Length: 149
Image (tube, rainbow, N blue to C red; front, side, top):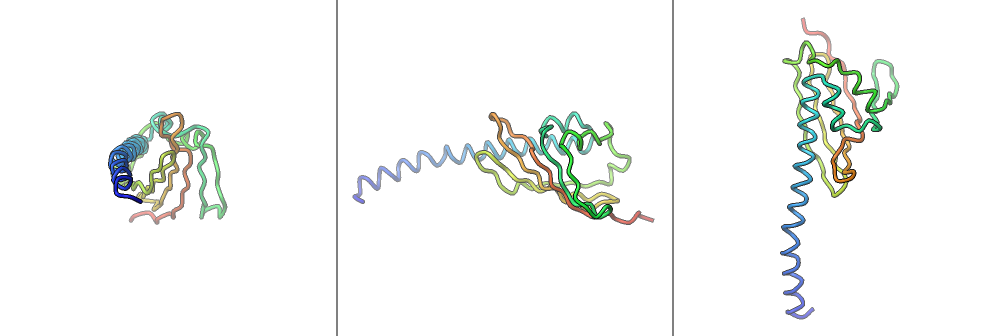
């Protein structure tokens, strides 16, 4: 490749790089906003808030050690299980999330849940649909903790 073509390619790459990084950062920021809303929904026990970022036709799956079987419900059905108010032990519940990957149309987030009676992990799959990031799947695992004395 001659020097002028190489220089032109490098210039084009340098022009496109900031745009690509800005798009990735913008998508990452949008995923972060979705997760902040989801965390507020968990804290408030508010299904309406959760359904702002969780597609009703999404899926929630996990393995229950209690029933020793797989559980699968629609995201809407799962969200309806929230009482509309914070849990009585909300001050003892700890949650954190980590955005594992963001691509042009999909993202994966790990949520760690440390509750007085539950220790679990959720993996949330997000998709960018019509320009809006939404949680489309929730896969969970965890174990019950014994009651504190």
